[in-house]
Length: 259
Image (cartoon, rainbow, N blue to C red; front, side, top):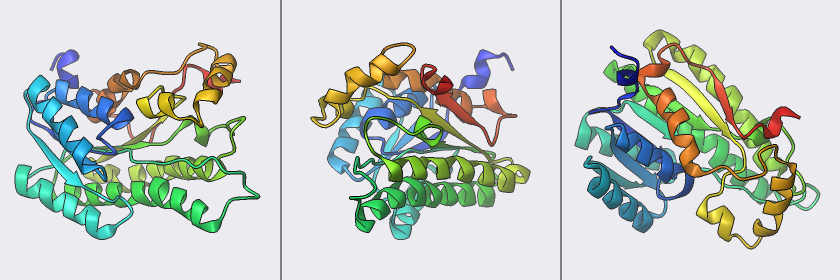
């Protein structure tokens, strides 16, 4: 197989949690352009349907939309069942859904703490666990990619986000643990740690807009990353191009964490 052919996802099936918009949508698009059929798993069903239709029209692949709460075992199990019923296989899982609350630790309620941990860490575990179990039972040597963050490596300033930072650090260690457990089955588990990414949500948030100039001033490249700049690294991890890569965390942050 030639080098470029190893990046193909033709006839593969990939699910993307939080796939309706932002990083999830960009990565889903990259997978679709590589030939994969795409499952958009998101709480925002209306936006997920719009994204799925775009992918079908622009990339000529098949899609499935599943309204999914990644913190619910029942909802995640329903996602896997729907995928099996439509496609009969699952090759790639991009466990990406996440939230952030910028609340000072001294003021944070337990409910706020738990909400972030529940989505960002429990949600990644539940979706990765369900995908890995399915792949193992079906004998599929698949790829699971979790979204961590550069916030797992540094404490972001000036905004307070202790729950987010802790949850993303947990994602990295979870990724390594699953990679060890599932290596014997040929199921690879990796994660990406993006830096500040200029999604539509970030660029339109009244809370975050005032921070963008500060982030850019601190960043070696003096800009936010584009969501599309995460397409190729996730395609590498999803495809046979990374057949000997598992348990890795790939930082994509424009060198922000280098100092």
